[in-house]
Image 1 (cartoon, rainbow, N blue to C red):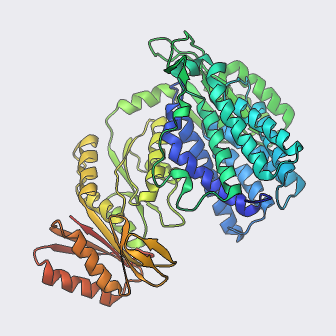
Image 2 (cartoon, helix red, strand yellow):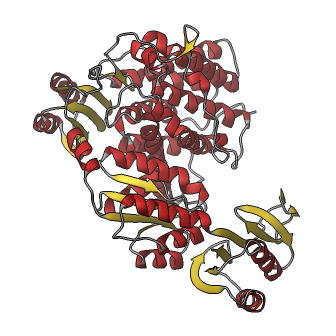
Image 3 (cartoon, rainbow, N blue to C red):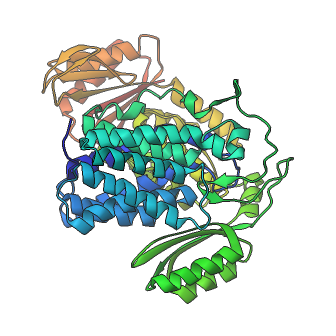
Length: 569
């Protein structure tokens, strides 16, 4: 348990919150009460924080302070990065909550945050979030943030510790979240709580876990194990799980008043989403811009300042919305989405693109030769959802298959798929959990076949490939294969460490024996950057002598950490 919040805690909190949002992304998306194309709250929250962290890492790497930045440096970078990476209404509001938290640190030049300062952070974040929304509504993320701020202030004023302040804010936010269906008929009708508010609760839950030390790198709020659905997010109404019929047709999107829907489900309202950044402006010009956009459309959120503002609005007159921005200052990153075109493009049959992750230069070269757009993804720097989405766009196709080739990148790939759908891009994840499974999937790709046929064939090939690896232990641990110490040889089968020994060649043969125990006709050996020639020779000799019928393919993968990756089909 910690007495203050430091730069290390800030880094851990950002990563843990991103993991929580990734794990709950689909569940949060399902809570949306209004099916507009930018209404996938979970995906938008995740991509916003994911993109922000990526920007901070890049910036701090250039400055030589990655992992060593002060709390003020971390907050300065994160506050701006979240504004730049914000996606949809929910992402913009999240950026404002985080901006409020970071502002307090930066303005006071704090090296660490104590309990009273943490309460100030909560209050500032709630104020800025509410200020950003043109027409704030209760029963949304704004109500949840307000409740957290009030409870944090009461606890701090009573002399509570920083952990107690954070826990009070979390508990109040959770209670406020459960009240959102009482405040919004649309939520009651759907039988759900507010999606943005749920994301706010995850943010506070992650903070509490960081401050109490109740987390680990492998835990990540249940990401690695697949979290169970949170039933409290779908409350019972009058004794019966929702939805119920309230006759409501006024619905909300992440705290902003949205357009209404007809009973038969047809969408009515502005046809375009417009987002841009405004520079070289001032508060007076931004106030005028806000008033103009408020007359032009709905779902309006204007956030940021004093030197950069983010604008999000749904309108019919795109030209007028952009001209209003030009009148206010210099525009950057103008993004216009035609909701009708999105729907139409999803129905078109288009060429197939492939995006694949690679953990080494050799693997990347092989995948590129197969026609894939490759994204580098290695332990410690795995591909983000934003990178995968950019790669999907780069294919130039309207149907894309994404091969994560690593179990820890699957969630990012799924988030990229959801985000791609907003742009009219049909994307699918092929469940390749290792590089050898990805190569097996690529081998059955048929450009002449339909997208669905390729998805079925490639997913089947990936699942049918048994996989293993050998590596060297870097720390002491208890594994399924027994206790290991640094320097021990480890054998991995289907993602689990099942063998521990002192000779890598012997372990490699034992891995092959297990993989081939159920038969196999094709063996793929993917060599790492630091593979020993004797290891490879020994494995090949064993295969020649013991499995003479098998076709053996040796490929230079160049991956780090794993001298040998093995696939058996």
